[in-house]
Image 1 (cartoon, one colour):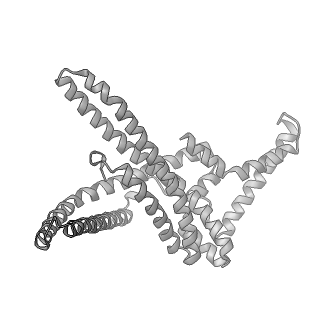
Image 2: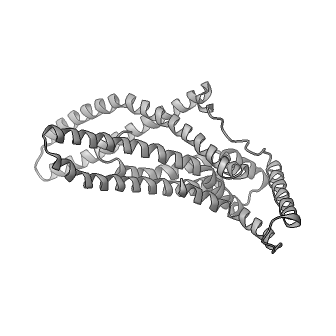
Length: 322
């Protein structure tokens, strides 16, 4: 949460500099009397300017902010469920093809080395395909259920973080963090076609509007990871007690703690780099096709980075939950 506050304060740096310049015009250390009145007037003028900018961009302040239970409406549930089913099904099929290609390459090396005949290789290939396909299809419903639960948990975490931001900062900061990048890209494309203006603007919008969602995703994954390690630790501890050998539990504690911290660090940096890659991809996609290109570019950047980190983060079968 402290890191999130630092990032949010960094995004509001321009606003803070403006306030400091106003204070610099009044060297008195006390804010009473005329100085306090002048400072208040400047604040109101700045607030009016930001409201005017929001109006001029064809949107209202906090227009894109979601309500607490909006993700549970019928339309939202249908869209989110369909999205999860498509993503999980695609992941299962893609990993199956990847593993199949890897297995074929290893089998081809054994044939060239004379360890297998073509008939034996064909038999092994057929057995592998039947076994693996059935195993992965049977695991798909569980993956879909977990994906749906994770989606709604992430949505609730996002609403909670938005509530904290609104209390800790102001509505203008919250507006930047809840801006719909899809609609913003289309509005920006109607005003300018200069690529040099679209890319940096959309990259900044994608970054700010994705901060809350990425931190919410990190929080949900961290809870899953912590619960997995807790279950594993309690299971090992109970086994040691049954054997009346507490030394086993003590010897396993340090490696387990190190593994937990290592995976937490990897997960954290995967979300940070994913946020940066998503913002960069959103900026590139906005140059090609504002709106849908923004979404596709953001997703591609995030998936590219996440796939690299997640392969290490959840590589161990005992931690594989998704």
